[in-house]
Amino acid sequence: MGLTIGVDIGGTKIAAGVVDEEGSILETCKVPTPQATDELTEAIADAVRTVGADHHVEAVGIGAAGYVDEKRATVLFAPNIDWRHEPLKDKVEQRVGLPVVVENDANAAAWGEYRFGAGQGHSDVICITLGTGLGGGIIIGNKLRRGRFGVAAEFGHIRVVPDGLLCGCGSQGCWEQYASGRALLRYARQRAFATPENATVLLSLGDGTPEGIEGRHISQAARQGDPVAIDSFRELARWAGAGLADLASLFDPSAFIVGGGVSDEGELVLDPIRKSFRRWLVGNQYRPHAQVLAAQLGGKAGLVGAADLARQG
Image (cartoon, rainbow, N blue to C red; front, side, top):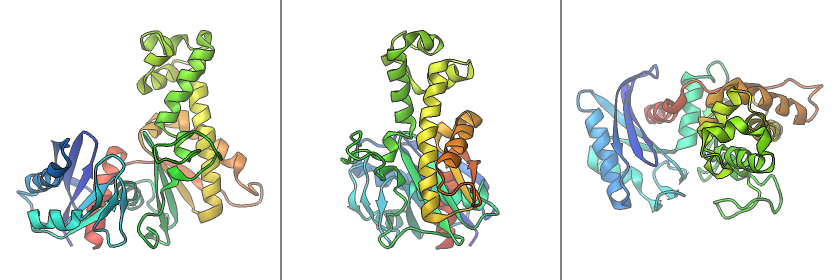
């Protein structure tokens, strides 16, 4: 199969791109994400038609945040969109006249990194995305492992603290409450409130109050040596690395790939994640250690991965 289109559904925009067999994006377009759910399918179809107008495209892959069934056709549940058992594959196929594959967005990003990014050369890879929440994907034996019902790798909702912080999923103590962009912001605000004298740079970047701190301020302040910002990254990394150690006990991959917005800070977050991973890895002195690698495709991973999964059929 030749050219395919990948679609990445975001909270504010829908991105579509024509992708070749080497993972290169030949053309892209973006359309606003409609607020009305009943307009979303048509917006996806519009993006596909627009980007594919000048190309011979053979299939479409869609990355959607939520639970996608084992047939990669129906969105069973989406936390941020009012989709419940939404037959997205059929609806889009009817509008664009092309075969469509629907995949969880984190799975699509993981596949993109495995095929064309940091995972190249590895057959067993676990990906995590540290964004607003925490997502993931499992590639074992060169295959994307989705589970019997298609909803595997929801790593963010592994409970790491019994009766811990309330999660948006309704449970308590989920991993993403301790290792995510949202968690990083909470750490920074709490520490700035407790010891404002150690957060002078961080506070100066906002309105001078802990409540005025934003995620971008934490990165800026950490690069300027602000103790609270640096310590907040270390706290996130401690939880992230400990979680990777648990995943190593389950899957024994050769590499972990860390993506998402938080990972854009590079070694500021990756180095302490590696240290925490080694600290909590069971039998760490007597076993090989998986590599902990930075994702390479950035925000393109989901689009490229979805397009390639459509090519796989």
